[in-house]
Image (cartoon, rainbow, N blue to C red):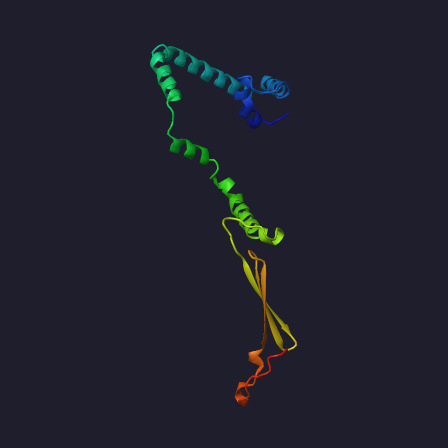
Length: 179
């Protein structure tokens, strides 16, 4: 059996008939054998009875025509579009939902920026031309490649490495341009 505190917390639901048959039968058995819980049950029943009497007495004083007219008017009133948008967006920007927004945004941006790597030649958002320059060092001679995506043009430059010359010795670069 459950302890008295747990039973007392469930008494209201039991009296209102909100519990499943198994827990309801358990509470009924406990209340029949426990004076403290039986007293709490009686107190809740008195409170319920008092509230019903008070509500029934004051219900005759309420003007329900005006009440229902106001409710009908509020239902019929169409909200402005900014109000509807704000109401729609309010749950979206709750802190619990914003927790995933930052990583999701990062993933979308990285995916958008790397589409060209997975789909070569694919263009997006008015991207018209892409060019890349590659530099290759081969046995003291350098080669630079310029590749342009739109016209599919490749330009190759062959040049000597100017940095390796001994500038202090006064030697100039060789006049031999043949590779």
